[in-house]
Length: 256
Image (cartoon, rainbow, N blue to C red):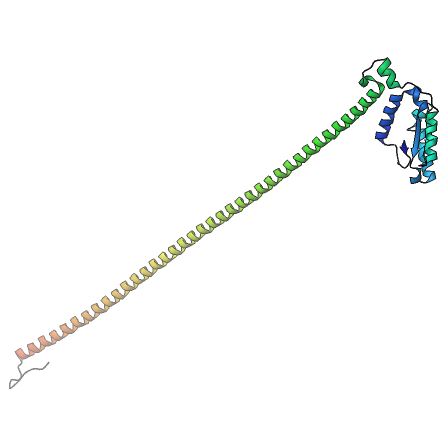
C-alpha cells in the first residue's frame, strides 16, 4: 500500500520496498498487487501524475516482473477488487523460503537479510556520520567555548595590565611632582637663605658705616673739644703770664 497523497516516495519506503522484493523474489512478484490509496486527498490530475512517476521510477522493478498496480478509492467495492486480484493468484514459493529451507542459509545471508544488513549498515553509517558530526559540533563548541574563555582571560589580563600601567604612571607622576616640589622647596629655601645672607651683609655693612660715621663724629667732637681745651689752656696761660708780669693796679682778679 502506498499513499498517493505523499509528495514523494521516501527513502524509508524505498528501502522497505527493496526488502519486500528480496523476500518475495523476482519469480513471485507476479502475485504482488501494489495498491495506491488516499486518492480523495489530491486532485485527479495530481494523483495521475504521481502514479505515472511511481510506475516509471520507484515501482518499476516490480512492475517489470508483472506486479500489478491498482487504485484503492476507500470503498468496499474497490477493496473487493484488490482482494480478487490476489485471490486469483496461484501460490508460489517465496525466495526467502527457498533460501532458508532449500538452501539452508542463515537468515543474515539471505537476499532479504543482506538487504536488511545493508539498511542497517546504511543506518549505522548514517548514525556514525551523525555521531561524528555531533562530536565535531561538540568539539567545535568546546573550542569556541575555550577560545571565548581565552579571549575573556586575555581581555581581563589586558584590563589588569592597563590598570597596572595607569597605576605606575600615576605613581611616577606623583613621584615626579614630589621631586619637583622638593626641588622647588630647596630652591626657595636657598633663595631665602641667600636673601637672609644678603640682608645680614647689608645690615652689617650699614652697622659698620654707622659705627664708622659715629666714630668719625666722636673723633671730630673729641678733636674740637681738645682744640677748645687747648685754646682755653693757652688763654689761661696767656692771662697767667700777664698776671705774673703785669698785675693790675690796686689788686683785683681776672675773670675768664
